Image (cartoon, rainbow, N blue to C red; front, side, top):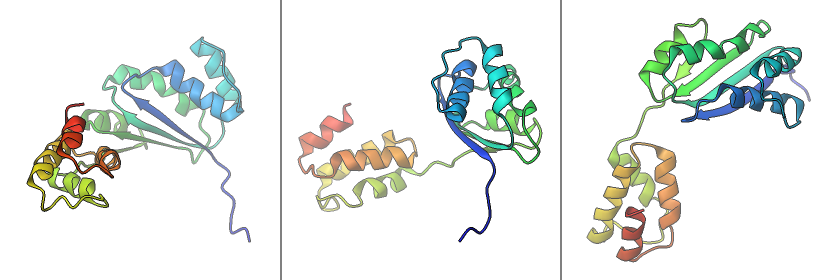
Length: 177
């Protein structure tokens, strides 16, 4: 049974530390066409993308670049948008949030970070080793939780790495990475 149709393209692009407008635009074009884009000129890429655009949801994930001029350069994408299109940005920086949200009807999500104790709870959950009675592992585990910088994904990855490890030297080895 079809309840409704969702006639909108969706792109999820991880921006991360390396802000490269050509790479971001190429990623969107490649996702749209399902073909590798060999173009390197931004104007040519824009023209190809403009032909493909319609109504879309664009998620720019993990934006780190705080330059308003770089953000202005990216806004060309929005000029191709059909009514009802949306752009969402995830960022850890309040500066990015203010740059994005002052540019029209856009949203920016700033994920909150966890406390060291919450990260420690994630790390010790589902471990094969009972760590609450092991002061040696608990001390290292709390240091590892601190290294997570409040990011639940980092805590989960540490937990997965320690899943079957019960020796202090193994935990200490991960801490020193």
